[in-house]
Amino acid sequence: METLNATVNTNSAMLNASLKSLQDSIDLRLAAIETKMNNNFVTLTDANAKLKVHIDDSISRIDGEIMTVHNKEDVTEKKFQDLETEYNALTDRFTALERSNYSTQQHSRKYNLEIDGLPLDVTKENLRGAAVSLFNAINVRTTEDDIEVIHRLPANKTSGAKATIVRFHSREVVDDILEKKKHLNPISIGGGKSAPVPK
Image 1 (cartoon, one colour):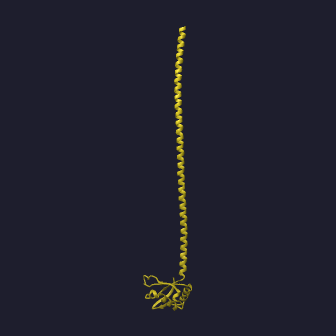
Image 2: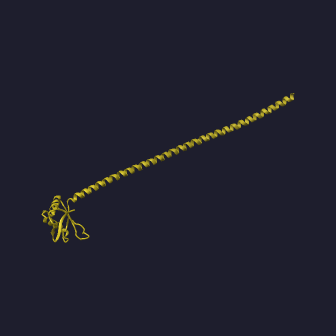
Image 3: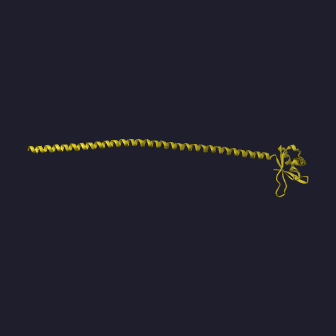
């Protein structure tokens, strides 16, 4: 009986020793796993923090690029608007100049007469005198000083005749000539027929 008890005690001691050894082994492995998990967690936390910083930097950079593009678009739009404003202003000035030029031409033409029939042998220097002779012949008293400008037009391609443009200082002289012309036949000067005709 004592032998049996001794055997049981021995086996129990051995079992306890084995269980303790297994428990210690398990504890060691669990501790190693926990340490590894803690290390992995720290590493993952660091990686996440770095990734967050990278993402934040990327977002800030992209926001900056978007803002730059918007600013460039705003600058381009403003330049376009400035150019459009300048173009419209220039167009308005051009239109105003055209109207002013047209008005000036219309006003200037009121002082002009076109004369047909002054002899071709009348020189440029003698055009004023020939024109004055013509006007005096229809009872319009003029002098060369009444004439501002006088010049011949290019010759007619068919007849070869050259009309003459006379610009007076006074519109009254023009009106007087036109009035007298209504009641007279063409006047002959130097063998050519001449009659004042409004431009």
